Picture (tube, rainbow, N blue to C red):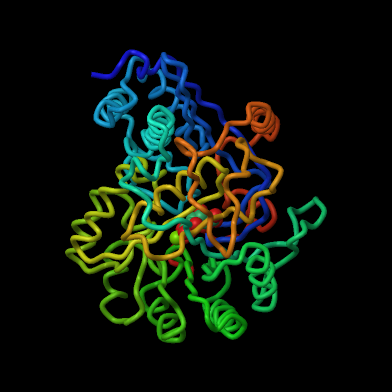
Length: 424
Ligand SMILES: O=C([O-])C(=O)C[C@H](O)[C@@H](O)C(=O)[O-]
Ligand SMILES: [Mg+2]
């Protein structure tokens, strides 16, 4: 039985917006603002904890409904969190993954409970005076390596001044982007978001990156933009260069067809996005590596369960990211630190966020040699900056965006932009 002081008395759900760059992907281009939601849980004893998640309207409305169910919950009970979230959602479990068409079929209950799971762990850590990584079984690494996440991009949002990253629309532009990112953060592996240009151009880009950084592992992720034949062609052309090829084609069947005919390991954050996907993925031999993402998989503790399943079936683990703020980076770092199976450098969109825009004091989240040291303070180890939260909430209210729509934004500038899979 929890002490009454460890019962939830208040839950706030605050949508925020922060500036984003015109990053290109196969479904379009990032809008000027990325949307997130910050949740804060407070106990009767006055301890509070935070979590962060996606920011679309359907998701936000569901988070609010779940939040209203949490009063009185024991912050130690993941089972009760699951039950209350399930109850709050009722039959409303379709859509709303906030991924602009790139992920479907992840579990809505897991998506909704994830930020609350993180907030509860933050509180638990503060109560017992231990970092979240300890609550997840203990850190097996003192710092978590992240990879340089390269994007083709425009020089700036149309109608605005160019941003300081400038354009990256060809191999030379990507090599420059990688160089700056590696010099700034010290990353020692590279991921390129592909599916933007015809495959031969992206093959040339990966070769240029390999030429410029021959010792760094490279990944390419076109978000299922290719047919199985195109996927096999790219895999052949880049044989021996790629550490893994991420979601070259759509669905478990498509991935299995590619996996059976290439030695290049296939990874996914699109066709294995919930626990229900694991058995068929294993049965079909569709992927070798699953990109965990606590925002989709039900929080940090559920990702521990994912890790055990990956271990049992010999699947590798990496980590997916989306445009995110410091609460998510802290949560990702604690999780990766406490997950021995997670042997690949994690993805992060961190370099694409302006340093002066966050809802926490990011001092505890510094990159050194491409890694973030695991925070050692109790809980997540980050402190909510309420003025900054209010500022980014005001920005959300003012910016007018309510749902991520990479395709719609792209079509404002290129009405003929295709939205078909596969594109090549
Ligand atoms: O690995 C991935 O699929 C992603 O990072 C998905 C993201 O939504 C990415 O495509 C983006 O930010 O445009
Ligand atoms: Mg991916």
